[in-house]
Image (cartoon, rainbow, N blue to C red; front, side, top):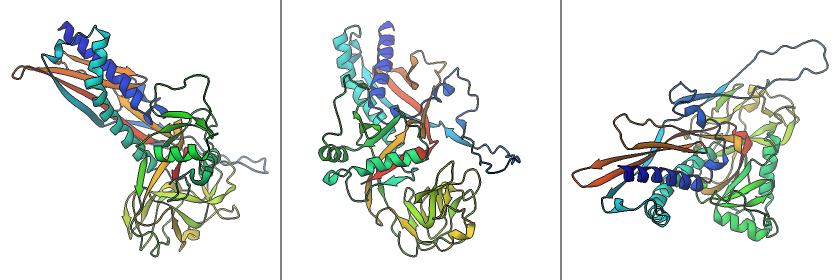
Length: 411
């Protein structure tokens, strides 16, 4: 039993270390809510957590008379209900491994734990990156042209500008997730962009490349490739059906896929605080597939009030009828796939893991945490086949809490 417990602890510790190393995207987003779902944590609301959005207000101008505003607090929900795992078996001969021997421990980890955890974490990290990128509406770059081609990396700085305009903090918590082909194009086009740093930075995270253009660069082959809807141009005009704070636009003769990004003629983005026209059309992303029907969109459309995010070309407030019969312009061509790199601030997205229970009848079951990442390892013997069965489990959830603090870079 003592040797089995050593193996159990070793598997858990090694698995967490490898998980932390492989989680390229997960390790760069908001993880503050993990402690809420610890087994002895403060959360008692089951698998969901409600997170308050920042409050917004309007400014009183040129008057000493108060214009009192009610509080209009809104929340978002993080649901922690997805359980993934990897299952293994070891026979008695394999368990004769002497875990006190560092060389043997390293061999055991290399042979069994590393490939198992690489598969598990790579899948979760990729799913998370895909899910979050599909929710991002800010988009720069030229669809079909790799960033860095002919030395042009302006898309990186345009993405940075989008984050700045949406008031994302200008700190060290900004990152890029870029596939290796795009990274090669960027580096080849601007070899002077990256400089060796005096010390190894974030060496525990696989894929860290360097810092430039206002953010850390991570090379990640799991970046999202989006395939657009099959009909993005046939009569794609909006009609009556837009309401202040609404998340749908009535359309006809258009087929879109969740993740398609588009603009509406005459509908400009405005500054979150001053409400001044930012000089470009507001981008929206379809949040669900739609054919000849209302498109569900993000962000919600606010043309008046404290949360106003759109205005006219002159900066004037819009009204509902201003959306009638306006032409849609989509990013990319119909039925075409485009690779999407991502720039984001840490607090744009949240990833949460929760402590799984230690079963009462499980003599060999441990739960370990590293930097908020919670992993359970459970062993049980199979007397018929003289084997020890092992399962590694993670329970997790995610949310795009402030997607305006992120920007796609389309290739």
